[in-house]
Image 1: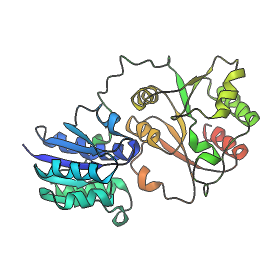
Image 2 (image 1 turned 90 degrees about the vertical axis):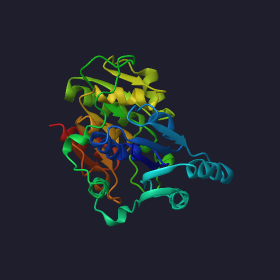
Image 3 (image 1 turned 135 degrees about the vertical axis):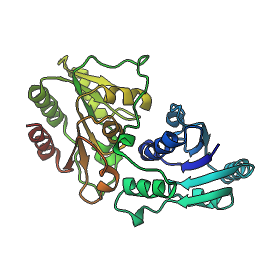
Length: 296
């Protein structure tokens, strides 16, 4: 039995990239034992995947990192992959017993999928496009999902100027602009709109839904990510700022409009996305018109 140790101590979207690698390994080496070292931001979500045999939480603080090191030092691995590229992960891995070690360096590649193909080549595993279907066979039967057909507008903190990267273009709408956008969108697509959000519901959404009387526009909030995944998986379109939800839509080949900032090369993340269209961030009045026009 081959033992793999993979470090992914960052966020959910980052893990979904690594899941392509993990699925590839399991496809050719079903009896392999895969351990993922996770962060507090993706630990619970990673545990929902049966394909992963063990998930270890990297807790904050020097002594917790030391404790993790000694735990891992007791074991011997066939392959260790530091896929998060974090200095702390590299440092811990440097002293572990492992026949093969790979430290991620995305600067050597044009995209994350190209790096994955390189890692797989070194593992003598052939990549094929079916490996992009990383969310197949997920059981959503016990989770509420809206009645089809519907689209999703994922409105999280990335739409709010003061809550996101200040150097990015401001796309925050006024309440009136948001009302115009959502009502125009319902007319355009003739489907229900499900508005989802992140950890906290932005105040502007609360104000909108306090007086919203349109039964075709509904809010779902306080969702864990597995629940959000299931709702995206059953939708016909996702409109969102780039993030973990973008990776879910890509994995399920759901049509998506990905809102990105021109200052960053998002193609590093999205080169392998299917059914994908991106729109650059700009003032909301122009942005929502671009979104509507893209649906022609």
